[in-house]
Amino acid sequence: MTAVGVVGLGTMGAGIVEVFARAGVPVVASEIDGTALERGRAHLVGSTDRAVSRGRLSPEDRDALIGRVRFVVGLSDLADVDLVVEAVPERLDLKRLVFGELSKICKPSAVLASNTSSLSVTEIAVTTDRPDRVIGLHFFNPAPVMKLVEIVRTVVTAPSVVADAQALCARLNKVGVTIGDRAGFVANALLFGYLNQAVTMLESGFVTRDDLDAAMKLGAGLPMGPLTLLDLIGLDVGLEVLDTMYDRGGRNQRHAAAPLIRQMVTAGLLGRKTGRGFYTYG
Ligand code: CAA
Image (tube, rainbow, N blue to C red):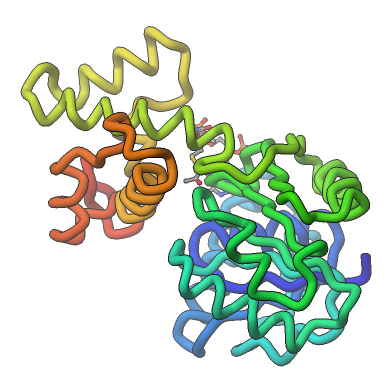
């Protein structure tokens, strides 16, 4: 593989850029305008600087890693890449628009991948001229740390594209698991019912925030409690996943978002990225 494109440089997109650049793959990193592009660049610089300060990366390797990334506005610079990973906000209309454009711009052999966490990869694929070369590559937050990638194949994805995705995950030092196209795939389908239930418990006054998180962290051996995890994921992202799961998954009450999540999103309490969610940061 000579180069990949990453479209959308929010928390996930910027993390995915870092994953590829760390593995020695040149990346064309695309955003919609200069402001968003600078935010994505700052995310990459901040993350790699932290790795240097922790002694996990030498300053020379950090510079080489960043040097592998070409930051661009718009999609026209993606004409020559072999793979595009799309990580724009989790809205089907937006993703379909981006894939329609990529289909016109990218060379016919290029694979088009979505990092969607709960939308239908099939509905995205059919907006392109190559549904057999469209796949889901679902990374987890924080992308440079989490080992899993869900490889989502649709009923029309070519087996060779799935095999290449598995080989790619190994090259990125990730574990790829292959899954069909259903709401929330595996990890989110199981995780988000639990996260939603945790917020419902908090809302009912059944337990305090800190005790709830401590119970799951210390009692179930998880790296963080559910409210801390929702703050990491972003409550806006969490709400989008829940709403999609509810609609696509047969309106299961498990995924009917707790009112408190919706209220916090409306109030801008999105978690770590806005400095306040269930906890306060910075
Ligand atoms: N970017 C890059 N590296 C990061 C990072 C980030 N945002 N956050 C932490 N790290 C690195 C640290 O630098 C550190 O590396 P070293 O040990 O080599 O120095 C390592 O990760 C551990 O970090 P910390 O010591 O600061 O903290 P920790 O031990 O508590 O680990 C954590 C942090 C990795 C986030 C851990 O708490 C964890 O695994 N939490 C659960 C995360 C999770 O479940 N993610 C999935 C969310 S669901 C999702 O993403 C799907 C979706 O579609 C919404």
